Image 1 (cartoon, rainbow, N blue to C red):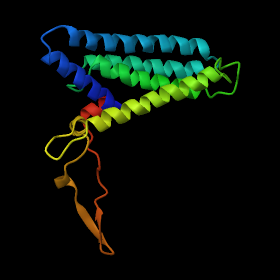
Image 2 (cartoon, helix red, strand yellow):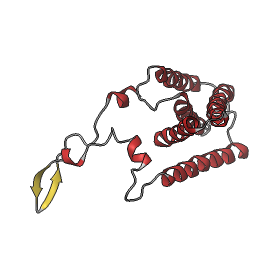
Image 3 (tube, rainbow, N blue to C red):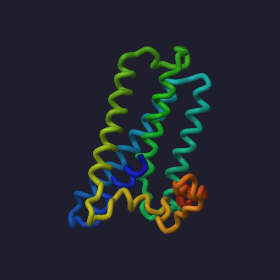
Image 4 (tube, rainbow, N blue to C red):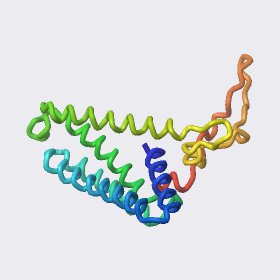
Length: 190
């Protein structure tokens, strides 16, 4: 989901930078405001729908979301923005809502045993799945192009030259069991 959030952000920001008019800027700001506003509404709605011990879970999620929005100000990545934080927050809120809606205690879960809630979970989950598949498959590369998804995650994966094959067990080369993924400060900060 993070790759998709960065891909959406990259596309909207490049359109904004290439556009001489205000339309792309309005779309970028509008998308950010709509998703952030939706997140705020969804947080409030979850506090109204779920009670009991769920307040601890929801409060922890809210703190994490505030930190995601706040970390954008420190610019841990050059492509980090409020839009990427809002998309990631929206997905976290969906996961939390889906999990809390599964609580079988009807006193703690106002959505328990409602067809509307179950249908909404399926539709939103399908929406996420379709969006991710379309965006990632649309950004795959041909032989002469660099993949947009590969460039987004390029700092995470080590180069082929750094992979060593140390052991030869029964005729098969076994990769060194050291770091498979490089750990950058941006990854740790996020």
